[in-house]
Image 1 (cartoon, rainbow, N blue to C red):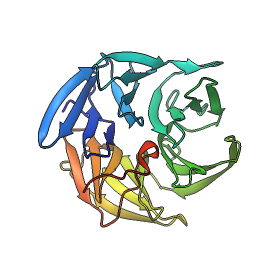
Image 2: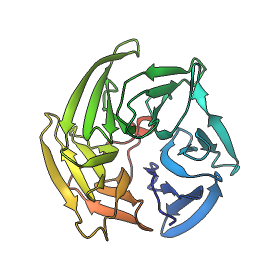
Image 3: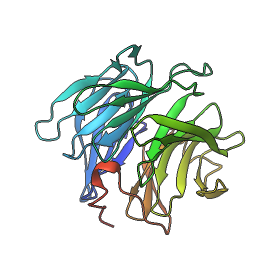
Image 4: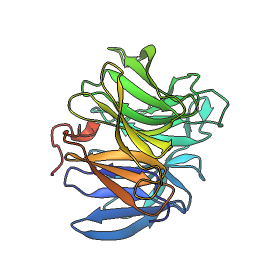
Length: 268
């Protein structure tokens, strides 16, 4: 794989990831193949309820959409009213089909934000921040909390989602010292798994904010600058931007299915 950054898992166990020259890869039933390209630089990936792949692309500064039936790749969105994407980094769907997208902006220049793209229009800049490089996102099982990895802030932030869908209270869930958090994933017990680009490690943040280490690789070999993470059953799949592979880490937990698949789960 060409320095994979994004990774997503479908209910049937298919693993999707992207490369730094726009490659969109699929791994299913032991077969690995490139199925399409955005022609850019793939960051985070998400799947909608129909199984189509949505890719944040750094080169295009847009969210691209792969129709997994036709193989066609198109620009899905390059911003929302009043805000053109600078560096769209990670997409996550909720159970209603709304797509939250982090816009990391410029490194070391805190700013907006998080956009929300509605299935029937009405796209908005959902949260103006400021965020210190908003990166990976994850939605709680009840859909009432959005977790945000702020890479240069060395922290994970939690934002309440109110009954009408607006952003509510914002708080720091965990401070991570000098670690640079990138991707996020949740298990069914509410534990948050945080891939850290540097040092190469996966941290676990308990619901109360306590931080522990799931995996660490000081030599940056098997786990090399991990970015996004996704669950395949109890196995956490990590994309390694620093090398050319995905890593599989046994957790002993059950991954929380992504929003569109909460009623489907994933095979072990």
